[in-house]
Image 1 (cartoon, rainbow, N blue to C red):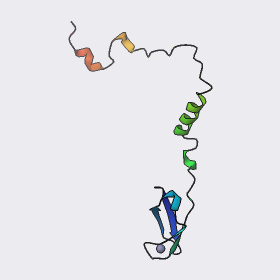
Image 2 (cartoon, helix red, strand yellow; image 1 turned 90 degrees about the vertical axis):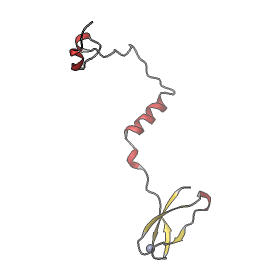
Image 3 (tube, helix red, strand yellow; image 1 turned 45 degrees about the vertical axis):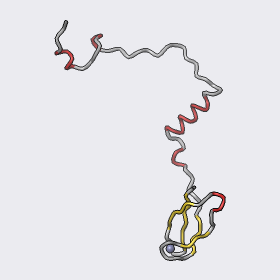
Image 4 (cartoon, rainbow, N blue to C red; image 1 turned 90 degrees about the horizontal axis):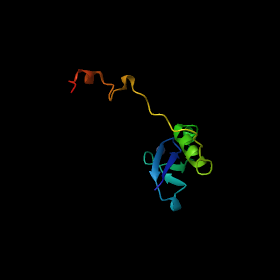
Length: 95
Ligand SMILES: [Zn+2]
């Protein structure tokens, strides 16, 4: 059930869950008992322009505009050509 925000005539703000098909426009305040009107929910503008929004956009775009790749991604090169870059592994005995 969605969460609705109410504000009473005294200014108390509280939230209640109601079924979407029978959400009340007015309930009584749990603090003072005054009639409380349902408030409009704030638009979620903060997620616009975020990394999650960019990921959604690029995923949607890739459905009809796949990115063209001209070369394979290169594997990162390790310094020294060894198997590990941990300096403690240099002290291990060589066979
Ligand atoms: Zn109140």
